[in-house]
Image (cartoon, rainbow, N blue to C red; front, side, top):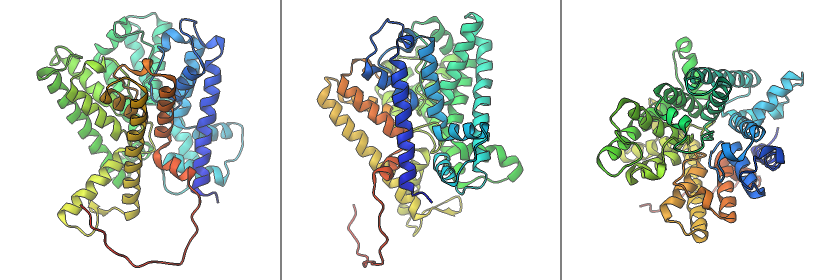
Amino acid sequence: MPSPARGSKILVAGFAVIILIGTALLRLPVSTTGSYQVGWVEALFTATSATTVTGLVVLPTHATYTLFGQIVILSLIQVGGMGFIILSVVLFRLIGRRVSLYERNLLKETLGVEGRGGLVRLTLVVFISTIAVEMAGAAIMFTQYVQVLDWPTALYYSIFHAISAFCNAGFDLFTGFDDPALIFTRENPTILIVLSILITIGTLGITVVYDVVAWPREQRLSLHTKIVLPFTLLLSIVGTILLVFDEAYIDGQAIPFIFTGKNLVLAFFTVVSSRTAGLTLIPVDLLGEGSQLMLFVWMFIGGAPASMGGGVGLSTVAVVLITLQSTVLGYSDVRIFERTIPVETIIKAVAVLTVSTALVTGITLLVILLEPVNLFSIAFEVVSAFSNTGYSLGITAGLGTLSRLLIAFTMFWGRLGPLTLVVALAQRHRQTLIHYPEERIIIG
C-alpha cells in the first residue's frame, strides 16, 4: 500500500505537469492575439492561476488570448477544479482500464472521504454531476445574455462563466468595468443568483453535497456537514451586512445606491465570491477599508476541504474555534453537536492554520522587499493567491518577475493545501517503542 507521502507527491507532480503543459500551450502563437506580449513568466502565471482555480491575471484574458487560448485556460480550470486524478479515473473507465488499489488511495486523498468502497462510482457521479450543474447554470445564464449578445457569444459567455464560477476560478471574459456585458451582468439579479449558487455548491465539497442530497433518504448529516453548512451561511450573511453598512454609511464607493434591490444582490454576490471564487464585477479597490479587511479574512478562511475552494478551510477554522470554546468552558474534551472531536483532527487543524499563516506572512514579507506597494495591498494579493480567490486591489499587472513567481508559488501551494505539500516533502518517520513521561508547559 502506498504511503501518504508518496500519494501527496503524485498529486503535487501531477498538478505541476499540468501547469507546465498549460504554460507551453499558452506560449503558442495560436493562443495569443498579439495585443500583449506573452512571455514565459506571463504564460506560467496564467497557467498556474487557471489550474489552481485562482483567477489572478497579469494580462486581460479576453484581449490577450484567442479563442484557442481561452479554451486552454478553460480546460485548465476544469482539470484544476475537479482534479486530474478524478479525470484520469473517468478516462480509464472510458477505455476499459481497471482502477488499481493505489489509484483508489489517491482518489480517497483527493475526494476527502473515508474508506475505499465505491470510490470509482463516486468519482463518476462527481464528474457527471459537475458537468450537469455547470450546464444547468450556463443554460439559465444564456437566457439572459442572449438579450444583449448574439447567440453564439451569449452561449460561449454562459458556458465559460458557469465553469469558472462552479470551479471557483475567477476568470472572466470582460474587457473592463465599463464593458457593457459586465455592466449587464452586475445589474442582472438572475445571473448574479445563478453565479452565487454555482460558487456556493463548488465551495461546499463532495461530502457536504452528498449529505444534503441523501438527507431525505437517510435522515442524518455528518458532523462535518453540520459544521460547514451553518458556517457558510453565517459568513455570507454577516459579510453582506458588513459590506452594505460600509458602503452606505462609512467610506465605500464601489456600489452606489446600495439599498436598491439589484445592488443588495450584487453585495451578496461579492461576499459569496470572496470565499475563493473571485469573479470581480466591482472595483475592489474602491470598497471601504472595512469591507476590504472583511474580504481579506473571508478569503483566508476559504471554502470547505475537498471542494473547489481554497483557503485554510471552513472546518479548520471551525475546529479551532470549537476547541477554544471547549477550553474556555473547562471541558476535558472538545465537543459539538453531541460529538467529540478527535485529538488528531484538532492537531491537523492547528497545523494547517499555523503553516498557512506562516506561508502568507513569509510571502508577504518577501514581496514587500521587492515592490513599492503598501503593506495591505500586498497582503491582500498574497491571501487572494493562497486562497485561490482572485480578488485584487489592482496591483497584479504591475508586479515584477520575481514577485509574480512568488505569487504563482503561493497559488500552487494554496490549491494543493498546506498539509499535502508538508507530507509530500516530509520523510517517513520510523516507529519507536520509546515513550517519554509527560511534563506540562506554561501557556499564555
